Every structure is written in structure tokens, then in C-alpha cells.
Length: 69
Image (cartoon, rainbow, N blue to C red):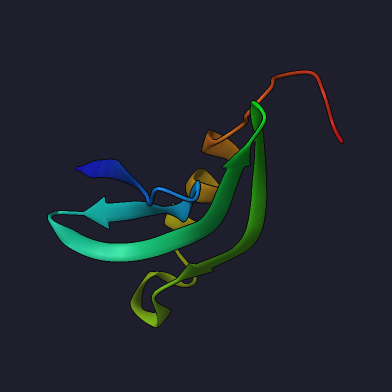
């Protein structure tokens, strides 16, 4: 089962972590400032490449649906 965990420090920087069966499968480096979410980088563990998990991860998160900045 997939689950996500958001970790943000006091400066608004952090990551969204993706877990599959309790094993960290990927992450998305983020920053939150003035109500905006910025994604700097995404990565998945090599063991998940070629599976549906990276696609799920990249399409599951949207800070403001319908808006691209």
C-alpha cells in the first residue's frame, strides 16, 4: 500500500516522501512560501523504476488544481 508523508522545516522547506509497503520509494523536494508550493526535484528509488509508482507519484500531487505557475 502506498502512503505519503510531508516533512517541512520552520523555513518552509522539506519533502513529500512516498512509501510503498513501509519502504521509502521516492521523494519530492518542496518549499512552501506565501501560500504557494514549489517543487524543486522528484526522484524514485531505482527498484521502483519501470513500475506504475513513479507515474502515480508525479501525477498525485497538485498544489492548486487548474493553475500552473
